[in-house]
Length: 282
Image (cartoon, rainbow, N blue to C red; front, side, top):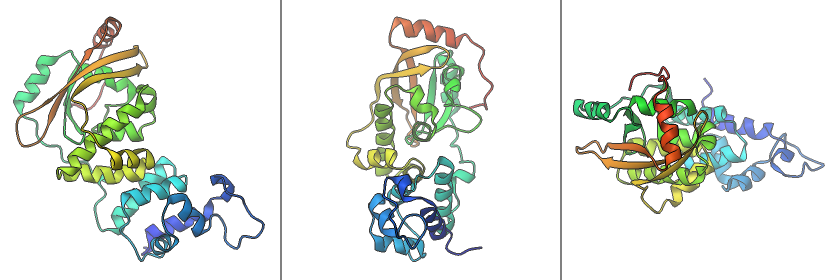
């Protein structure tokens, strides 16, 4: 196995990109293929010396923000960003969180019973950092068509920042993204290790779109409000949400969605009376 896998990947990717691909002049005399280190350093906002240390394997613990900036500058695809994230974990001797199923905290039977009482309304129980622990069948009917729930346990922030369908689902995507980043920042600042790990992941896989929001989050996420959804079968929806902090030490929250206007009420009734898509039980 090549010892310097992270540095090798960064260098190979740098050398594979034409200057014109990133808006730089090709120049008449270039001794190296692709981008020069100095050019990539400027694009990513890091020093040439630091980039050299990364490529030569002398620094193997770059921050998520640095790697996100490099991923943006190198025009990495979503799959390449995931690969970069995994390389960082391998180099650091850690198990990649994306390669193993996360341990799901047990849900109290009374909370499961409460969700059953809320049927057929859309409601879910989430962690402080956005992992969806359980939800009603009504939420499945609402969210499955947009890809928010499925066979893989969902995370609200990961969906908003890394699933292309999210931008079509939320017409006010920037505002929703601000809210999800603020929720992660608040949880991480309070010592939630899972939130900090997810923030590191998203700095790489989502790049500056997430990193800037996370770094500058200055307000707590809203506990109540209205979200606009562009639903593929029901059209435009205005969904009011209420977030209730649940008792206990797990910092779980119950989120319930309600129609915010008569048109949404009618559309939601149609959605909730449809057959529920087949998904893994939550």
